Length: 246
Ligand SMILES: Nc1ncnc2c1ncn2[C@@H]1O[C@H](COP(=O)(O)OP(=O)(O)OP(=O)(O)O)[C@@H](O)[C@H]1O
Ligand SMILES: [Mg+2]
Image (cartoon, rainbow, N blue to C red):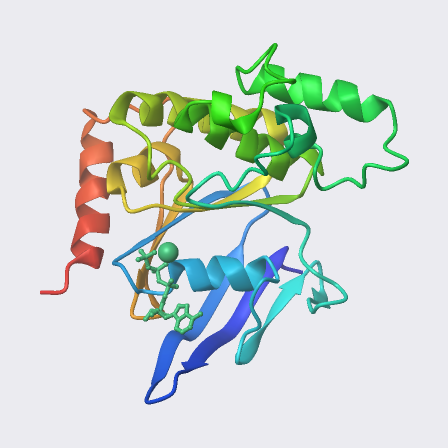
C-alpha cells in the first residue's frame, strides 16, 4: 500500500468569461518521510495543488488516498501549512499564535511547554510574549512554521515560505528547515521558485508545467549539501532543463 497517492487530480476554475485548468491530471506517489519540493513557473498550479492537499480547495476530479483511505472534508490529510507570508494574528502573542490551532479553553498546561520547546527549536527562545509587530520577517515566518508544527502533523505543506526573505535569512532558514526535517520524521511538501533551494532541501524535486508533472527527479544527496559538487550541478541542470519551455 502506498502511503500517500494523488490520482488524476484536476482543478478547473470557472471564471465569468473563461475556464482555467489549473491542474490537468496530477498523479503522484509520496513516500513517507520524504522532502518533496515542487518547482514550476508562475501559474503552473503549485499553490492550487497544496491548497487542495490542505483541504482549502476542492478538486474538480481525482482522488487523494492516504494510508489506503480516500480523503475528503470529513477525513482531511493531517497537514500543517505555511504560506508565503506569515499570516500571524496581530492581536495574539507569539506563544498564542503558535498554539492557535488549539482551542484556548481547556488548553492543557503542557501546551505551554510545547510552545516553549518549539520556540527553542526555531531559535526564538524568550520571544513567547512578543507581539507579531515586534518581529522581523524571518522571525515571523519561524513563528508561522511553529504554528504549522504545533499540532504535530504528519505532513508539512510549505508554499514559498522563504520567498519574501533576504538572502542571508533565507539561507539560515533553509538550514533550519533541513534540520527540522531530519529531526522530526515528518513528510515535507514545499513549493519554491528557487531551484538552488529545491536542490539544497529536496529528496525529490517535482517540476510542474501547466498543471502537469513534467519531471520527478530524486535527489540522493546527504545534508548539508555542497552546491559546488558535480552531482549537485548535474541535478540542477536537469531541473532547469525540465523547467525550460524551449
Ligand atoms: N481562486 C482562483 N480563481 C480562479 N483562478 C485561479 C484561482 N486560483 C488560482 N487560479 C488560476 O489557476 C492557475 C494556477 O494558479 P496557482 O496559484 O496554483 O499557480 P502557482 O504555480 O502557485 O503560481 P505562482 O508561482 O505565481 O504562485 C493560474 O492560472 C491562476 O490564475
Ligand atoms: Mg503560488
